[in-house]
Length: 398
Image 1: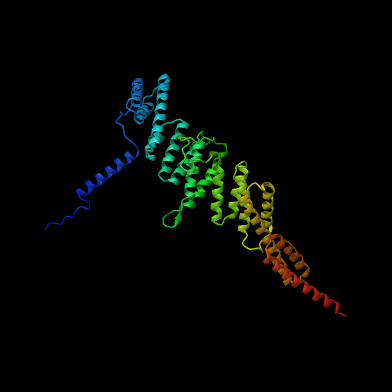
Image 2: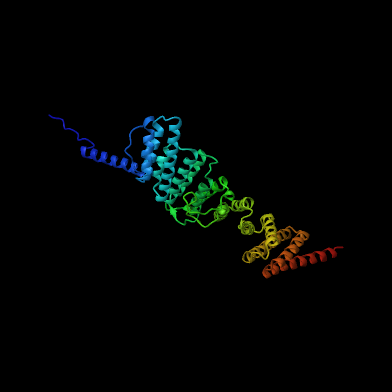
């Protein structure tokens, strides 16, 4: 009796489909890295003059800088050229690189197209510019975190490079784009919450105060966020945004610290006045109850008084808010003294209770709240009545 044969788990048709799918995937990967050129495996040293001449034709006649760079880069890697031949090859290759990079930036090619440049043995500045261009291509396609990580990796490979304004502005664009994005990812997570990591890296690694005030549309300075913003102000704006993000999450200490950083590092910025007014406001927002330590309230009041001393009459709209916060701080201090006075009252310390209540009344009158003044006066009347009763009892003793 013949044993039944087990049918193969994968048929020939399935294998053919898998092979076809794999081929399509490989073809797609190659296509994502830009056009592929039919070039020899290598060039010899005596072919260098001809290679350079053909590459120049690629640039001038065929208008194909990608082919020119690929041809010259292959010759650079495989020919073993030396001395004058090598120098000529390097110059021609550098010219082709410039034309190729500019073409890709202008045509806004996909990020994968830059892989040919990233794989080449470029000079330091060329490698940096190629990586910045690739990161900008990522950013233009909404890949903001990938763009940030590309720049961070590049900074590790080429610290203190000469294109810090271009890479720093790209980080600013990525971080501010995230900060202003009200959307979500993964249903529950907000893009806005990703902004601090990017902006913190930008502000700690780059100082925009030394950037050039040049706002041209050349690829080197191209910006998609706040294109009219003076580049020297990017760091200050980033600090402001970080403060707002931390305040929204309830981390008032960090929110205040970032505004203090702005004042410290960008003291000439026109945003300093608003920051000096915002810091005491954040201190007051952080104090949820008046019976907490009064030091932050006193500190905020001192900062508000200092602001008025320095800028009174110069910023009318902002001054109105500063005056309002100043009255709020005074009222909080009055509440604090009233709470302390009530505590002394509960432990039968009339002297301590009266001292704090009198100070609370003085502050309440400065704070301009009739209800608060009435509340403190009522408590003081109760204290005086209790004090009078205590004196009568003392005199009645034999």
